[in-house]
Amino acid sequence: MDSVGRDGMTERNPQRSVTLSACLAIRNAVRFDYPLRECLLAVAPVCEEIVVVFDPSGNDTTIMVLENVKREIADFCDLRIEPVHWWSKEPKDGYSGGCIADAQNLAIQISKSEWFFVLQADEVMHENEAPLLRDIPDRNECDLIELGHLHFWTSPERIMIDPNSEKRVRIGRRELFPNVKCLDDGSRIGGDGEYRVLSLVGLVDIRHYGNVRQPTALIYKQREMAQLYGWGEGDPRLERGLLTGEVNWNEYGRPTVERPHNKPHPKVAVKWLEMRKREVEKGTVKR
Image (cartoon, rainbow, N blue to C red; front, top):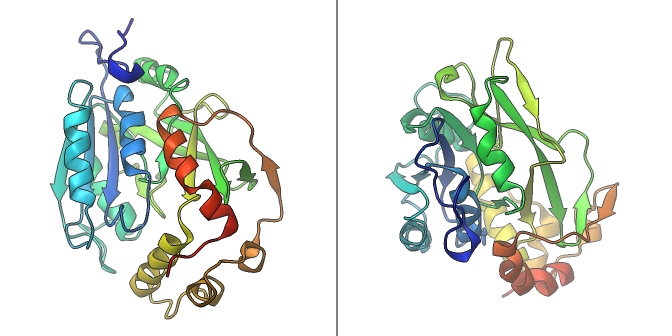
């Protein structure tokens, strides 16, 4: 049984025979208002290592956050920061899932564990679910592991319901790479062939807080994504927020199906959410 370390984190069990690496691609996490520290602190008890492919071409203090977290979680797992200029329209090393997925595939490629776990900087695990995930790779009954995906929409008390995104395969055996690799926006893995998939939807659900970030940060990110993918201009409904000082979420396009969320959030994310809740729900844009 794992021992409990500081702040409720779970220390590594030295007798554990199967290892797990979290793999992320990160750039401008501070500028885009990602809960990066919260993401890393939450996943640290689950993994032997976290591999971050970090693009230093950003213009914020992301590297300082990474270095601070590296020291903070040193007792629980290794945080490896690999500087790579991955923000590009061109695929990296033959991968073709877009530069974000390609960068996460580079993280998988250099990972050292027997299993890999893809995660994004605006996603946070719940501490009550981490112990379950910690023991899963010990089983020999699966090749891939599917987790739930809770997509919070403009409030930490509201979830967007989308059957196509409520579950994603995120964990795989390292020996299957690159036949199994990161795809699309980097939040899921897949590949050709027949694989045994263990579903933990409802037992281990990743909290996605991408739309609970400051509206100003959403606009900045949209502009860079538009440049990256050749969209031209960003969504004018968001851009108008820079003129009016507020984003009208109904105009921007609310999901057709939502449900309330009244369960506790991960403890590590509570302060981050509280600091943004009012600003996000009102759509406040800082000018």
